[in-house]
Image (cartoon, rainbow, N blue to C red; front, side, top):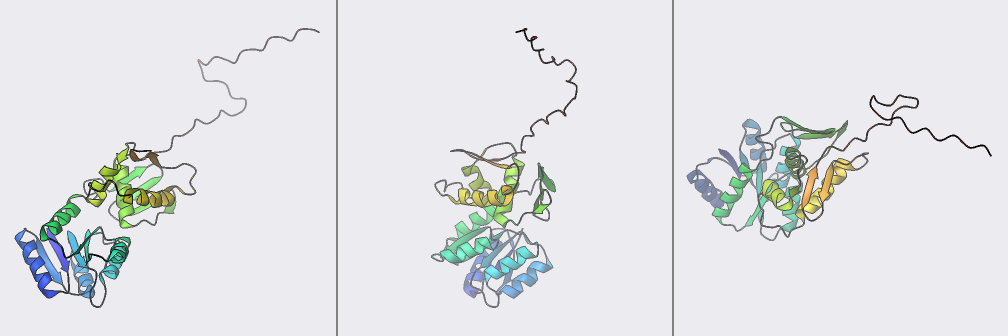
Length: 253
Protein backbone atom coordinates (compact mmCIF):
# COMPACT_ATOMS: atom_id res chain seq x y z
CA UNK A 1 0.00 0.00 0.00
CA UNK A 2 1.21 3.49 -0.86
CA UNK A 3 0.97 6.48 1.48
CA UNK A 4 1.44 10.18 0.71
CA UNK A 5 3.09 11.83 3.72
CA UNK A 6 2.79 15.64 3.78
CA UNK A 7 4.81 17.31 6.55
CA UNK A 8 7.10 20.37 6.42
CA UNK A 9 9.03 19.49 9.59
CA UNK A 10 11.96 17.69 7.96
CA UNK A 11 13.18 15.59 10.94
CA UNK A 12 9.61 14.52 11.77
CA UNK A 13 8.81 13.70 8.13
CA UNK A 14 11.95 11.60 7.72
CA UNK A 15 11.28 9.76 10.97
CA UNK A 16 7.66 9.01 10.01
CA UNK A 17 8.63 7.95 6.50
CA UNK A 18 11.27 5.57 7.84
CA UNK A 19 8.83 4.03 10.31
CA UNK A 20 6.12 3.63 7.67
CA UNK A 21 8.53 1.94 5.27
CA UNK A 22 9.67 -0.41 8.03
CA UNK A 23 5.98 -1.23 8.60
CA UNK A 24 5.68 -2.29 4.95
CA UNK A 25 4.19 0.81 3.34
CA UNK A 26 5.40 2.56 0.23
CA UNK A 27 5.83 6.27 1.03
CA UNK A 28 5.99 9.42 -1.10
CA UNK A 29 6.89 12.64 0.68
CA UNK A 30 5.84 16.27 0.24
CA UNK A 31 6.72 19.34 2.29
CA UNK A 32 4.02 21.76 1.12
CA UNK A 33 0.40 21.81 0.02
CA UNK A 34 1.06 22.49 -3.65
CA UNK A 35 3.36 19.49 -4.00
CA UNK A 36 0.82 17.33 -2.19
CA UNK A 37 -1.92 18.24 -4.67
CA UNK A 38 0.41 17.61 -7.62
CA UNK A 39 1.42 14.17 -6.35
CA UNK A 40 -2.18 13.21 -5.55
CA UNK A 41 -3.18 14.15 -9.09
CA UNK A 42 -0.43 12.02 -10.63
CA UNK A 43 -1.23 8.69 -8.97
CA UNK A 44 -3.72 7.12 -6.57
CA UNK A 45 -2.75 6.61 -2.94
CA UNK A 46 -4.24 4.31 -0.35
CA UNK A 47 -4.11 7.04 2.30
CA UNK A 48 -2.74 10.51 3.03
CA UNK A 49 -1.07 11.69 6.24
CA UNK A 50 -1.47 15.44 6.14
CA UNK A 51 -0.12 18.09 8.49
CA UNK A 52 -2.40 21.09 9.01
CA UNK A 53 0.25 23.83 9.20
CA UNK A 54 1.91 23.75 5.78
CA UNK A 55 3.53 26.45 3.64
CA UNK A 56 1.75 27.69 0.48
CA UNK A 57 -1.52 25.82 1.08
CA UNK A 58 -2.41 24.61 4.55
CA UNK A 59 -3.64 21.08 5.13
CA UNK A 60 -7.28 22.12 5.45
CA UNK A 61 -7.25 23.74 2.01
CA UNK A 62 -5.45 20.73 0.52
CA UNK A 63 -8.10 18.45 1.96
CA UNK A 64 -10.92 20.70 0.71
CA UNK A 65 -9.50 20.80 -2.84
CA UNK A 66 -8.97 17.05 -2.99
CA UNK A 67 -12.57 16.41 -2.00
CA UNK A 68 -13.85 19.03 -4.47
CA UNK A 69 -11.94 17.21 -7.23
CA UNK A 70 -13.61 13.92 -6.30
CA UNK A 71 -10.54 12.43 -4.61
CA UNK A 72 -11.83 10.42 -1.62
CA UNK A 73 -8.58 8.85 -0.48
CA UNK A 74 -8.66 8.45 3.33
CA UNK A 75 -6.93 11.38 5.04
CA UNK A 76 -5.38 11.41 8.51
CA UNK A 77 -4.60 14.97 9.59
CA UNK A 78 -1.88 15.90 12.08
CA UNK A 79 -2.65 18.82 14.42
CA UNK A 80 -1.40 20.38 17.62
CA UNK A 81 -2.83 18.50 20.56
CA UNK A 82 -4.85 21.49 21.85
CA UNK A 83 -5.94 22.82 18.43
CA UNK A 84 -9.61 21.88 18.68
CA UNK A 85 -10.69 24.40 16.03
CA UNK A 86 -8.12 22.99 13.57
CA UNK A 87 -9.39 19.46 14.13
CA UNK A 88 -12.99 20.51 13.56
CA UNK A 89 -12.07 22.48 10.43
CA UNK A 90 -10.08 19.55 9.06
CA UNK A 91 -12.88 17.05 9.63
CA UNK A 92 -15.42 19.43 8.10
CA UNK A 93 -13.14 19.84 5.07
CA UNK A 94 -13.34 16.08 4.48
CA UNK A 95 -10.58 14.51 6.58
CA UNK A 96 -11.39 11.08 7.99
CA UNK A 97 -9.45 11.18 11.25
CA UNK A 98 -6.94 13.27 13.19
CA UNK A 99 -3.96 12.77 15.49
CA UNK A 100 -2.68 15.42 17.89
CA UNK A 101 1.02 16.20 18.19
CA UNK A 102 3.06 14.92 19.92
CA UNK A 103 1.91 11.36 19.30
CA UNK A 104 3.18 7.84 19.62
CA UNK A 105 4.12 6.25 16.29
CA UNK A 106 2.26 3.09 17.27
CA UNK A 107 -0.97 5.08 17.53
CA UNK A 108 -0.38 6.61 14.11
CA UNK A 109 0.03 3.12 12.65
CA UNK A 110 -3.12 1.90 14.40
CA UNK A 111 -5.19 4.82 13.11
CA UNK A 112 -3.79 4.37 9.62
CA UNK A 113 -4.65 0.67 9.60
CA UNK A 114 -8.14 1.49 10.84
CA UNK A 115 -8.63 3.97 7.99
CA UNK A 116 -7.50 1.42 5.43
CA UNK A 117 -9.60 -1.33 6.96
CA UNK A 118 -12.89 0.44 7.43
CA UNK A 119 -13.54 2.31 4.22
CA UNK A 120 -17.32 1.86 3.87
CA UNK A 121 -18.32 0.59 0.46
CA UNK A 122 -14.96 -0.92 -0.43
CA UNK A 123 -16.47 -4.40 -0.75
CA UNK A 124 -19.91 -3.33 -1.98
CA UNK A 125 -21.36 -2.98 -5.49
CA UNK A 126 -21.06 0.32 -7.34
CA UNK A 127 -24.47 1.58 -6.24
CA UNK A 128 -26.72 1.17 -3.23
CA UNK A 129 -30.44 1.92 -3.48
CA UNK A 130 -32.91 2.31 -0.62
CA UNK A 131 -36.31 3.51 -1.83
CA UNK A 132 -35.65 6.67 -3.84
CA UNK A 133 -32.17 7.10 -2.32
CA UNK A 134 -29.31 6.30 -4.73
CA UNK A 135 -25.71 6.13 -3.52
CA UNK A 136 -22.98 6.05 -6.18
CA UNK A 137 -20.01 4.51 -4.35
CA UNK A 138 -17.49 5.20 -7.09
CA UNK A 139 -18.31 8.89 -7.51
CA UNK A 140 -19.34 9.15 -3.85
CA UNK A 141 -22.50 11.04 -4.68
CA UNK A 142 -25.97 10.73 -3.17
CA UNK A 143 -29.39 11.58 -4.59
CA UNK A 144 -32.85 11.30 -3.15
CA UNK A 145 -35.41 11.34 -5.95
CA UNK A 146 -34.21 14.13 -8.22
CA UNK A 147 -32.43 15.98 -5.42
CA UNK A 148 -28.65 15.88 -4.98
CA UNK A 149 -27.56 15.61 -1.34
CA UNK A 150 -24.68 17.82 -0.26
CA UNK A 151 -22.92 15.49 2.19
CA UNK A 152 -19.57 15.66 3.95
CA UNK A 153 -17.25 12.66 3.62
CA UNK A 154 -18.27 11.42 7.08
CA UNK A 155 -22.00 11.82 6.37
CA UNK A 156 -21.63 9.87 3.12
CA UNK A 157 -19.80 7.06 4.93
CA UNK A 158 -22.53 6.92 7.57
CA UNK A 159 -25.21 6.70 4.89
CA UNK A 160 -23.33 3.95 3.02
CA UNK A 161 -22.96 1.87 6.17
CA UNK A 162 -26.64 2.22 7.05
CA UNK A 163 -27.70 1.46 3.46
CA UNK A 164 -25.52 -1.67 3.43
CA UNK A 165 -27.46 -2.82 6.53
CA UNK A 166 -30.88 -1.60 5.39
CA UNK A 167 -33.71 -2.58 7.66
CA UNK A 168 -31.36 -3.43 10.55
CA UNK A 169 -30.96 -1.34 13.67
CA UNK A 170 -27.29 -0.32 13.84
CA UNK A 171 -25.92 0.58 17.27
CA UNK A 172 -23.83 3.64 18.04
CA UNK A 173 -20.87 1.38 18.86
CA UNK A 174 -21.11 -0.24 15.42
CA UNK A 175 -21.20 3.17 13.74
CA UNK A 176 -18.23 4.40 15.76
CA UNK A 177 -16.27 1.30 14.75
CA UNK A 178 -17.25 1.32 11.06
CA UNK A 179 -17.06 5.05 10.34
CA UNK A 180 -14.75 6.49 13.01
CA UNK A 181 -12.69 3.38 13.73
CA UNK A 182 -13.12 3.97 17.46
CA UNK A 183 -15.84 1.95 19.24
CA UNK A 184 -14.55 2.85 22.71
CA UNK A 185 -16.04 6.35 22.97
CA UNK A 186 -19.64 5.19 23.28
CA UNK A 187 -20.29 8.00 25.78
CA UNK A 188 -19.68 10.60 23.06
CA UNK A 189 -22.62 12.21 21.31
CA UNK A 190 -20.72 12.58 18.03
CA UNK A 191 -22.90 9.93 16.35
CA UNK A 192 -26.10 11.67 17.43
CA UNK A 193 -24.82 15.04 16.18
CA UNK A 194 -23.92 13.63 12.77
CA UNK A 195 -27.16 11.69 12.48
CA UNK A 196 -29.16 14.83 13.26
CA UNK A 197 -27.38 16.65 10.40
CA UNK A 198 -27.86 13.68 8.11
CA UNK A 199 -31.56 13.47 8.91
CA UNK A 200 -32.06 17.11 7.94
CA UNK A 201 -30.30 16.66 4.62
CA UNK A 202 -31.94 13.33 3.82
CA UNK A 203 -35.53 13.62 5.03
CA UNK A 204 -36.40 17.29 5.47
CA UNK A 205 -39.21 18.23 3.09
CA UNK A 206 -39.87 14.62 2.09
CA UNK A 207 -43.28 12.98 2.47
CA UNK A 208 -41.82 9.88 4.15
CA UNK A 209 -38.57 9.62 6.14
CA UNK A 210 -35.89 7.03 5.37
CA UNK A 211 -33.79 7.43 8.52
CA UNK A 212 -35.27 6.00 11.70
CA UNK A 213 -34.23 5.89 15.35
CA UNK A 214 -34.72 3.07 17.83
CA UNK A 215 -34.50 4.95 21.12
CA UNK A 216 -31.68 3.75 23.33
CA UNK A 217 -30.40 1.33 20.66
CA UNK A 218 -29.38 2.97 17.41
CA UNK A 219 -30.43 3.95 13.90
CA UNK A 220 -31.77 2.29 10.77
CA UNK A 221 -32.42 3.09 7.12
CA UNK A 222 -35.54 1.61 5.61
CA UNK A 223 -37.82 2.10 2.62
CA UNK A 224 -41.03 3.79 3.76
CA UNK A 225 -44.03 1.47 3.81
CA UNK A 226 -46.54 2.15 1.09
CA UNK A 227 -50.14 2.41 2.21
CA UNK A 228 -52.52 0.44 -0.05
CA UNK A 229 -54.34 2.71 -2.44
CA UNK A 230 -58.08 3.18 -1.90
CA UNK A 231 -60.21 1.55 -4.65
CA UNK A 232 -61.78 3.99 -7.10
CA UNK A 233 -65.47 4.81 -6.58
CA UNK A 234 -67.83 2.25 -8.12
CA UNK A 235 -65.19 -0.46 -8.48
CA UNK A 236 -66.10 -4.09 -7.82
CA UNK A 237 -64.67 -5.78 -4.69
CA UNK A 238 -61.92 -8.34 -5.32
CA UNK A 239 -63.10 -11.85 -6.16
CA UNK A 240 -63.68 -13.83 -2.99
CA UNK A 241 -64.27 -10.75 -0.87
CA UNK A 242 -67.52 -10.65 1.02
CA UNK A 243 -69.89 -7.88 -0.08
CA UNK A 244 -70.89 -5.40 2.59
CA UNK A 245 -74.05 -6.43 4.50
CA UNK A 246 -77.34 -5.13 3.19
CA UNK A 247 -79.00 -2.82 5.69
CA UNK A 248 -82.40 -4.09 6.95
CA UNK A 249 -85.50 -2.50 5.41
CA UNK A 250 -86.90 0.40 7.23
CA UNK A 251 -90.18 -0.41 9.05
CA UNK A 252 -93.27 1.50 8.25
CA UNK A 253 -94.14 4.04 10.80
